[in-house]
Image 1: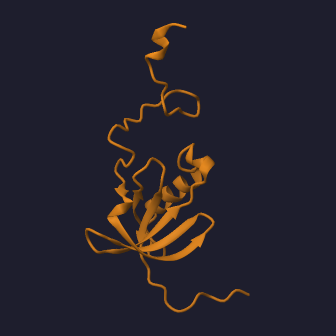
Image 2 (image 1 turned 180 degrees about the vertical axis):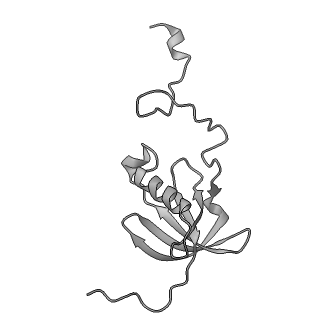
Image 3 (image 1 turned 135 degrees about the horizontal axis):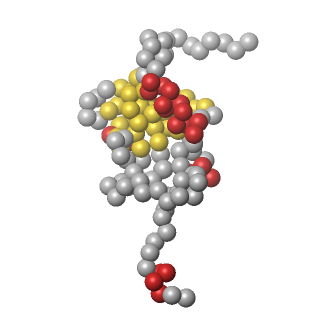
Length: 133
């Protein structure tokens, strides 16, 4: 085998068509996202199929927010953020309405695809949830 074949690295990221992607990630995965360590988790508010929601405080501004941790399974983790999560983030960030909680930002963990959170407005819950019939 030719030694020159050992002098290159295979691209780590490939497109769905198999083409190599240069994501320019030398500075890390965060991109324009905030690090999740910018927030102090205060308590868990709830958990559902798509993630866990925490009440949190921004360390820099003391603003109380809701952090929704996007649930990413082990097999999805190898392929990136699930398309359902990307759709939800994209749609909620584009919507502006009094009856819809705003997504303020996206926060991520220190490791690639380790943790992804939607930083959302926090709305205080009043009273008990509606009874199920």
